[in-house]
Image (cartoon, rainbow, N blue to C red; front, side, top):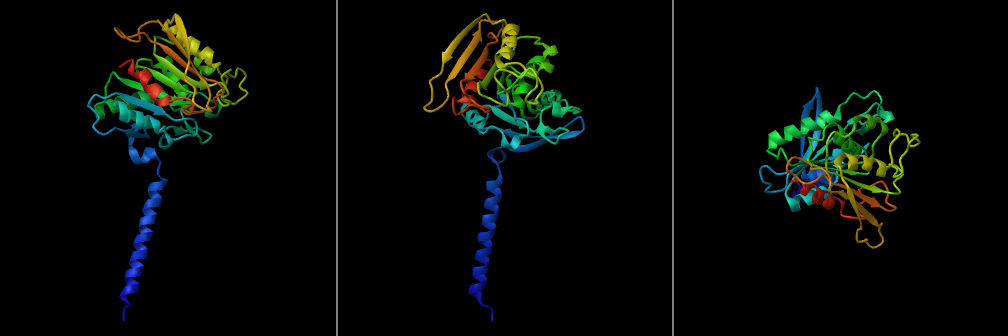
Length: 302
């Protein structure tokens, strides 16, 4: 005779196990994976991935922000706080995925020694991605912006030099100007922002002229910024100590201004340097509201 109570009990245990399994799978996903759509796009014969976040009720023609991850990082591990800012201010965020270099590390091809032999043109990929997103989703063709951290920050400097018309404004976080970028120069004014810790021992504030860190030789952060200040024609600087968060690092804002217009009929192309005293290699968002500061800067050029 079949014991119905045992069968019911086994079914209940199975349902609990399945629920736990699905719950575990959901927990394994990052906030980017749960809140964004996962998309692909062909670029030069290679399937490239990206995650796209569109806040609920986003207007047609909304601004778009591209956010680039760091070396060995991933799009799925992108900056979540940027989506929260997008919810408040009404813009889309795209997190592209970098490819693996000859050492097997994911990232953007900026000319690091470990990337020697890498043929990927990531500047062209991002340009094509921007055009694809604008066409496919109806995002603004004028109000498109770029940010990135570390290796993504290096891409910010590359874009300011190689393709300044792609983005209205750019914000680098812990980024650098490698000496291999120096021959490119800055062709036109571009609004630019950098957030950088003075005790960043991955991307040294004081630079690395002899490639002691293995990333290739690069300029000191103030020197990198000075090149953009000169290209933008900024003739004045204001220095402001931001309100210090309890137990956190002091942030000093260097605002370079009164330069050339960012675009015809537009405002001057300002340069902002957030100097995080004692800050490390990070988004510095424990010391300041970095993502809100990024959008505040971008929104001046809408």
